[in-house]
Image (tube, rainbow, N blue to C red; front, side, top):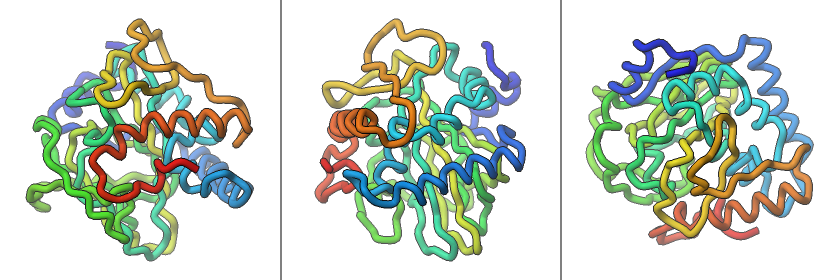
Length: 286
């Protein structure tokens, strides 16, 4: 299969459900990507239809250049192509931030639980560190091999200290002794499967923990919940046309981009809020 990963790396991903670390940017490039993100925070803190964090946590690539620049990095696409093949769609991009000295955590969960794609294996998450992601700053922890199970039951907690949109957590016991710490230096990336059990702890350091997180899928990934879904064609072609292929407008937070973002969020909210007993703020209409 084309791509940059070795056969041994591909085998490790298939076995464990994750792979890390993978070098993507050098230190200067990682700092440049972080600076671009933090300029967005400064320049667009006010005046948008929704709070800025809603855009940065949900489909940021639709409204801003910085996340698109990361997603189009050849080293990322080459690695993902090794796992998914030559036809690649970008389903979402988000920035995941833990502020310094925060007690915010991410509970044990499976990403794909609420994506409306069913039990598919045709997806992979690329998590690029833009600042140090280690045990002290609250990096991800993975349970190797847990992606081989089905989607398990989850409970929505809506806990204040949980960074997930629903505070969702796996409704089965997870043995912390089985977990592997996925530490990353700025510019390094991890890849993980959507059914992999993973979590992260608080950031006890004096720096922000910033990750740019991209969800890639194959064109034949099903739309199991909702009437329609959207994605950006990154490589190859989309023969199935199961999703609406979009081209995000150039620039940052243009009127056209904001309108497209609202359209995509409205469609994806059908799956991402299904069964929730409380409001899922990021997916509510502006």
